[in-house]
Length: 136
Image (spheres, rainbow, N blue to C red):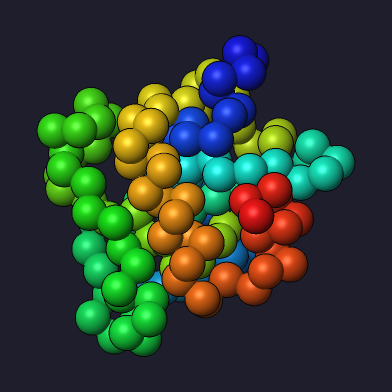
């Protein structure tokens, strides 16, 4: 797989579950999500990143709601509707779950910079997790 598909800002559409850090609802076993790579662990086995959501959960704590980066569906051809990138929670995806089939595209440099800044500043992600993936 080309390295740009595994670089910061690459977006993959993957099945995610609680092992990835996703909270499941309605008895779901998994949910497909757009996952944005932000960094890789020191062993190169797992990626840390954030996910797209179709909306901001109004029941989420305020600190989490404040760090949802809005993205227009016109910005990325793979989006079906306007969305939000949740910069308040760092998810994990194993390298083996990513492939040329799951790759959708890459965030613009401007959006990636904004997402990384938000992830670093939100205060909801422990520093050790940010360090694990080389985000700080």
